[in-house]
Figure 1 (cartoon, rainbow over the protein chains, first blue to last red):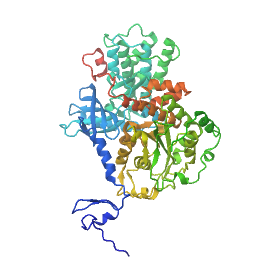
Figure 2: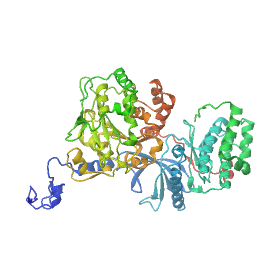
Figure 3: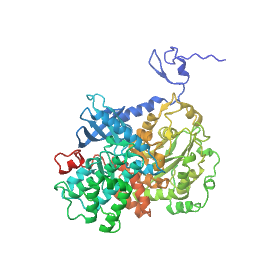
Figure 4: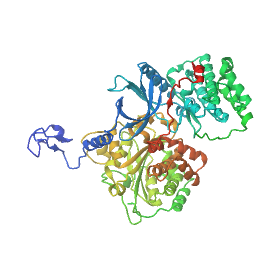
Length: 313
Length: 321
């Protein structure tokens, strides 16, 4: 057996046995002692992380669940929340949508919404769940905002390319949206409803503010899932369908309307919208899939075979 | 390394000649090639030269465990010339490519294989096809991606960074989680280098990010569920979920073009892809995969329409009460 005395080469003070395999700081003279020249110290990597975080130190930041976020843009204001576009401060940036509570009731709703979204993201059905998981919000975290008077935050992955909500779209097209756009918007909503209804869920609070529009891709993303219901019955599902038709009616009428469908809406489409808006039994009998088939038929009769019509905002 | 000129025609001919071959014929190594062994590796250099005065180091760290063998095969039999063609179309004229192969250091024989930075089709192809597709992986849901990050941070030296403070690119492909920390035992066993302690993967990422634009490419939507959230924690919007492994080269080339500001936006990207023979489906899936990253580059110009979440006094409010 060979005996080794580990001592500081600078001052001769005995060093702990850790010095045999890692860097240590001499307790006496403060020198950093490494065993050989070729030892790579963790500290150099740690410093890299510190530098990355320091680069953004001057920014106003919101701290939630261990991460710092820089709030960049106010996206909307609701009864209990302010919604921001935010950027996570770290080595590599991450864009998030943050719902920041402005009323005490928000915390339980955020918690509920986060739970719902996690369960919805986990749904799968012969592989199509991967497709639908992209159409629904993704939770990053939710919890108390540190040092901010007990405010809560729900942090979601920011969906890029979305222009705004259908409520904003309704404002933009105040005299009514082109019915051809209303058709694809309704079809996208029905597509998501069909998926969640198939898995026993209902959205529960479908309204123009709870759907975002992606004009370029003709995409719709449903948001506001805190009222979603698992184990939904036929009534819940038909209520979703009924409300989807009301959303479409709002778009067709426009913000400046008194609520009557304009004459530019083809008669068949107008009848389908009106009936779906009011007749829950009809919704129940058709389901989302049947409703989509009826809508396709009416759209084809009115506008011909499907074609991409650019939504210019 | 990095001398010689690239010939797109030669490269396309090289890959086309073996398009009919099986994976085991293209990748004939049955163990780590001695020249790709990282043991004793000091540094991989990406240097400027008279032929390449503006070199740009690009590293592909390919996961070669069982579930991920399709990307190396696609690169070797079809896609790598497309990557180079797109880079050229974007205006990146002096790229130098290096291939690494990544496995699982806890269970594989060759958990880390490292090529050299190269500029010619023959040498790029050589290092790619010398990779040993071990097809292992430990079944733990984690692979040793940390080794690629460490190697890039600690053992590469690029003139684009040293001379011009321009970062290189590190593209990792994979469908598993990273280990939480880089093990000093693994580094000792594989590279023969001493670490004073294990290094958390966040710190390894931070070190790599100082000289590279680091990206993690997930091959398809079905596989994103098991690893995307963790990678997004580590790499943010540099985590790219593709719709098909066949998009790897188009996505990587587009990232270089967008980051270098040689492609102004996704519309221009779609035009470049279409102009280089990519079909509509391929163009669409590439553009969709890059939307989040492109949004990040466009900041702070967001055109999101702010609105009150519950507009007051609208005629239609009663419909939803």
